[in-house]
Length: 279
Image (cartoon, rainbow, N blue to C red; front, top):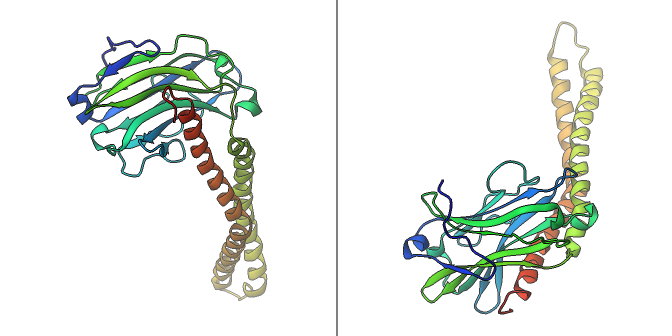
């Protein structure tokens, strides 16, 4: 892949050509960890801002927008490996006409709980690549972002009939949503409940099979009782697992889903209120 000859500085712009706008663009965001402690979970997002101030967020929990003109490659939990850590793809010619800006940001998930910040991140950048793999433009965040936990990297802005990429590199301080603080606790608990459901299923199958064989499995010279016992044990396990899911797991799953959605709204609101031209 060719390196870009267009290196932006903060507040500089790069105007896209008509050919670029008609292609599938990849917006790659990358960073290196400047320490050897616990992995940082950095989450990239794209907020589409409409002319009327409404918004739509594409992020780790909602991987594409309504008309599928913007999509996310998925959450990278560690940032390990070379190249872009997270990627967001955009087809600008399919973005709704009333969308005026696409804003790309990165926040550290669980920063408060893990006492982490962008002070532990180095060589952060955002770049744009065309459909042929040619890097069009790159914006390296050269300055030390310090104790920031949420940074807006850049935005694509509608410019008349075209689009321009504007470098921002704007920190939002040490910020965290209430939803994120709850998610940090709830996700771990939900994983524990899922593990417990698996244990209950296996335990119920074994116990159900044992009881059924004890009752029906003493027919001389026949394996029918044994297999019938296995079947009965499986039915008991399915019943116990279903009841556990309906009474415990499903409730927590709904809580986590609502928190993820609230996190998406908070990302958009945090980004929009700090844009150069405001909401």
